[in-house]
Image 1 (cartoon, rainbow, N blue to C red):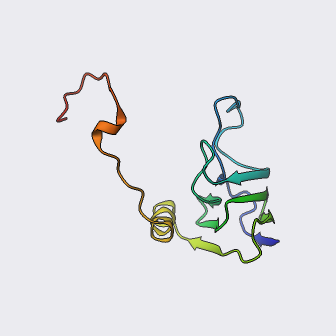
Image 2 (cartoon, helix red, strand yellow):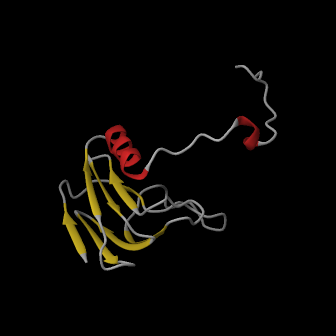
Image 3 (spheres, rainbow, N blue to C red):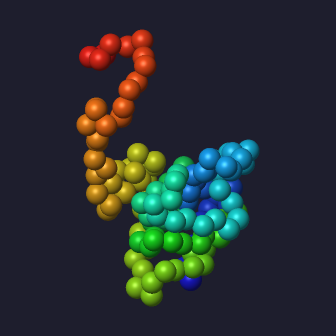
Length: 126
């Protein structure tokens, strides 16, 4: 189990997972309480990540992780392997995500044809 404490205790925490098609999104984007992050599920990232606009992020190199997120702390409660790597990333959100890009690899841009039919008022070259 990994536990991190941080200030301010009111720091907003984001990430972990998205909403699937049957979940209500009333809670918004902020995350609190116990949150399960699973790589590859709809709306989830490639690896469990919690980040804050207060200038930090925690990336866990795992397929599945249970986070306990609270006011002033993050706990990693469930690990899928005994030899996990944890990455503490510091900086503003653009720096956090550029560092994440370096750690995990740049996401490929799919060719335009793979997006299917798009009905738009814009021309193809705009």
